[in-house]
Length: 255
Length: 269
Ligand SMILES: Nc1ncnc2c1ncn2[C@@H]1O[C@H](COP(=O)(O)OP(=O)(O)OP(=O)(O)O)[C@@H](O)[C@H]1O
Ligand SMILES: [Mg+2]
Image (spheres, each protein chain N blue to C red):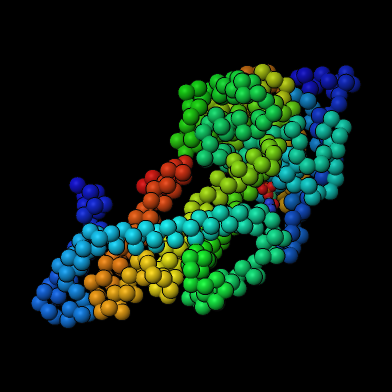
């Protein structure tokens, strides 16, 4: 009883309160409608967007952009992370440049990326890639460097091949940390999508928000934001589920 | 006894010969001498136990013999060959079993068996699972095993490689008294079935006397061999026999001598 309360009831109390407050404030016209639309108006527009396909189109455009940039970041982040984690010299070679690129925020990159790649899809994918790459890279390196020495000694004593040592010992041991990177990367990739679309695009959820502002339609802005939030939360939940499955051997993971 | 006979009739040839072994670590820019002039010969099939207070270099000694640490002075030969690094002739069981938590019991045990057919591998693994009494737990992950069970898996993982020498670093240190006794009998049983040379480090004098053909007592700072005590007791040994207690007492006294602690007047078992 108490457990179900903590698990299912407690997390939704605050959202419900916020919505009730929102309804109260807009219906009583405490806040002007051009600042925050009434939830009823938002729902109306939502149904309309759902009907004419706008919502699905926008969502799909944004999600597919994100998936392109993110999967590119996963592949390269893992490859570089594993190699840099294994070989100190390669790490030393790349570390400086990577760090410099990393600390310049995505927004500062956007103008030059647009200059080089135009305002098409390529630019957006690159911006997303850049956002997701570093969390994955850094956590992979950290995971590989942090593999307990004891495990490596066991592989050594057992005389297994380098390949087996990598795939059956080093990578599984690094996996918890790698997953942290994959999750963080997914979050930053999603944020980068929206940033990329706010600046230059004709479709997507980020574009819809900009359009809402330009047309003074706060309900459109709110729908865009809520969708971004919902999708972000669902993707995080999905990757958490995968993590739980893959890392089922971890003692603390079940609770 | 066998050991003794070999020595007397001149067929004696050590399996492991450690000469003038010294080892130091650098700790906070200071040289810390951990092992000093250790000389030790171990015969084939011998069960050697090592006792000594914490920090006297027992683990360091085992790690060097295992080939995990190559920076030392002196020499170690196995079958008259100088060792360099690890070798398939040596296996080691660590105090913290070091099983891979993402592999089940069977996968952990077969980890080192690479160049075998699947059938052969299965047979050997199954044989050893039964040997250490873990039948029915093949699919269990280390997180679902007790400490004693994990330690048995770790022993099986080393045994399947069929090493000539097994180094055991306080393998039962973390176990409760009952499990510990059970494990001691198991290790003796395993040993009876093969001619493996075993070196076992322990804090437990009782365990050292029960298992060892010889007990080495090490002293601290720097670690040296203080005394070698042969245990000429027939097996199976009775922990409560007069001779057993005498030997145990002898080692106990050496310990207290080391630590400069007064032996309690009413010391008895
Ligand atoms: N990697 C290392 N670097 C520096 N010093 C070390 C290292 N490993 C061990 N030492 C030092 O060497 C000494 C002996 O350590 P060792 O682990 O061999 O002791 P031990 O006899 O096995 O002790 P215990 O019974 O507590 O396991 C200790 O003083 C320890 O601080
Ligand atoms: Mg030790």
